[in-house]
Amino acid sequence: MQVPAVFNIQKYSIHDGDGIRTTIFFKGCPLHCAWCHNPESQNPNPELLWMEEKCTGCGECVNACRQTAVSRTELGKILFDRGKCTACGECTEWCLANARETAGKIYTVEELVEEAEKDSMFYEQSGGGVTLSGGEVMTAKPFSYVTELAQRLCERGTSVYIDTSGCVEWARFAAVLPYTDTFLYDIKAMNPQKHRQYIGADNQLILENLRRLSDAGARIYLRLPLVHGINDSEEDIDAIIQFLKTGIHTAQINLLPYHNTGKSKYDRLGRVYDPQGLFQVPAKEQLEMIAGRFRQNGFANVKIGG
Ligand code: SF4
Ligand code: SF4
Image 1: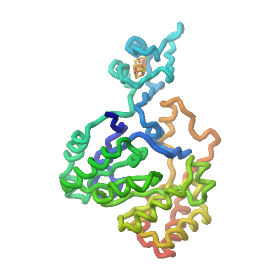
Image 2 (image 1 turned 180 degrees about the horizontal axis):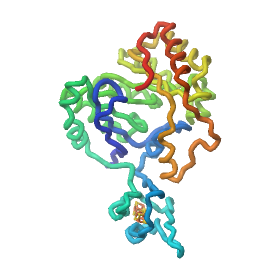
Image 3 (image 1 turned 120 degrees about the vertical axis):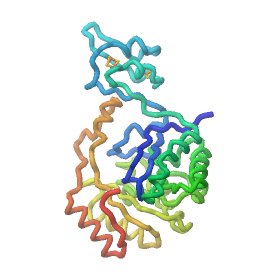
């Protein structure tokens, strides 16, 4: 049976909800945020990352690869043909320079529960727990895997947060709602045209699901990834505020300033990042201004950061 691939299990995380948390990142996402800092999360299938700058040219991967995805030129240069790579991971076992790495590992639900429960003492002491993230965990296939994982953790008394873009059918939210303490819910842009341009999808379903979650009494931390010049203008922020004022209940609003720490991952995946140099980090003053705007409109619990 197909199960979702996990590309990272982040221990001692303090940016993915309250307290000390273990964040489990699943591969696969219905969106394509132009500034995504986890590009290895977008494809649901395992992928190979090649850190060419670490490569010593030893050629072990050429011998290891049964798909002939790696070759060496007469001048000794290593070439990698992604089209042939099945991400089997064989070459990573032979690369002593750690220049090759697979993103995407398969776990059973039981294995993830066991891994997460190793840190239950920290969760208890800090008010933390487990955050299911991605990519988009809500699109994982089969979804019964995610529901079972959330249910098992919940039954053990572990707090479960779900970090989501909201771009999935409502039935999935209904399925995990009983086992989820808090949803970390993103709004990237209210303007539908801007949303399609930078996020690669319409935002109607996202906004509808947010309203339904709110109406269902879910605890919601709204997260706003802010990219200067793209979605941090007064107009952008006021549109979000006006939407929230139509009866959306949020326990917290997190302003998440853009950063470009994921840039090197694009190189490792053979992809190009921000070719037009559009994305900029919002200034501290801009973030303070945005936080102030929310507070003036009655949203007291606004934080800069996760
Ligand atoms: S095994 Fe690693 S270091 Fe050697 S050629 Fe392949 S990528 Fe480079
Ligand atoms: S991951 Fe597998 S298929 Fe891809 S280059 Fe390495 S050995 Fe070849």
